[in-house]
Image (cartoon, rainbow, N blue to C red; front, top):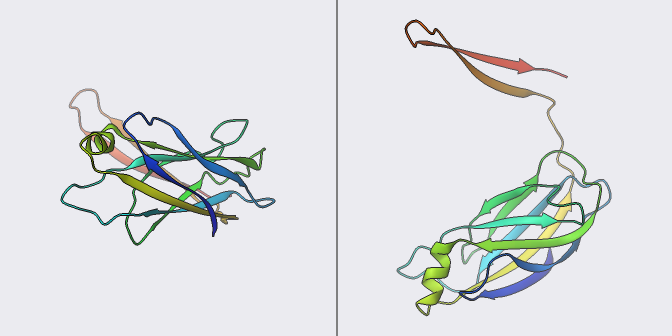
Length: 147
């Protein structure tokens, strides 16, 4: 894992750029380890929104990301190789966390990242429900698509 940065959040923080990162060639996945620098106290820290933003946007998507003193690894991927490999790792704390920070409880997170390839199984599952308009009962259907 490569150290991307550490940030101590303040009440005015919204979307924070943690640091720059360049994905490996052909990488379609970014793993980000988030380590909370203080022990969880009597307050339960909530999550933030983690993302990798290139000049073309959030090509790997965003995820709801939690932190722990021992570290938590989050995965950003949608199965596609992004068009731009260089970007920034972003984190947006939720208002619940900012309320604790306003009350004098600092929240410092350290971010490390690694990129690579996640293989696809080629199987997708779609769940649909068909409803009989006369009685409101549904007939569940699962469709499995193979490559």
